Length: 155
Image 1 (cartoon, rainbow, N blue to C red):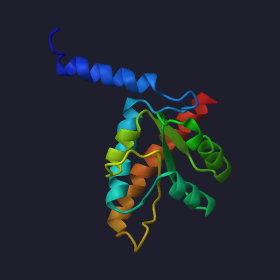
Image 2: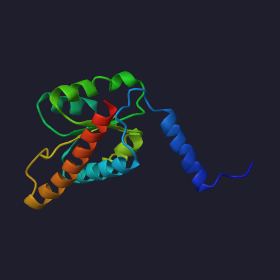
Image 3: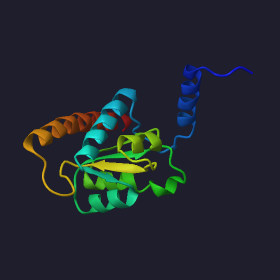
Image 4: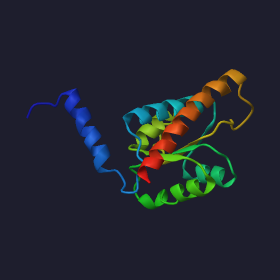
């Protein structure tokens, strides 16, 4: 009847995230890759190099923009995102799943939970300074390499 400690509550939250994970959520990022990916998304959001939501991501991929597609694994109904991995594979865009749409939205600087985001190197308007582009590019390439390695392990 006593109250749970903060550690027990966080463990329960993690279990809920794992339980609600979609069966197609592969390749799923581990904790280390999640952290790197969320940092990249935060930087990209600050530089306006982020596409949020299924509609915007699909439109960008069909137009030939390259980037890293990050998809939430706890989407319901799952039909909303089932076409994204196929679209990404056809376009040669690396993709990965993260367990929570809430964490994805928080990294992307929005309050509304987000199904997916596409990290691109070119901002929506204007240009990035050479220094900012270089910082973003190094993080981008590091995460892209990890995603490709993860995807090769799944196959």
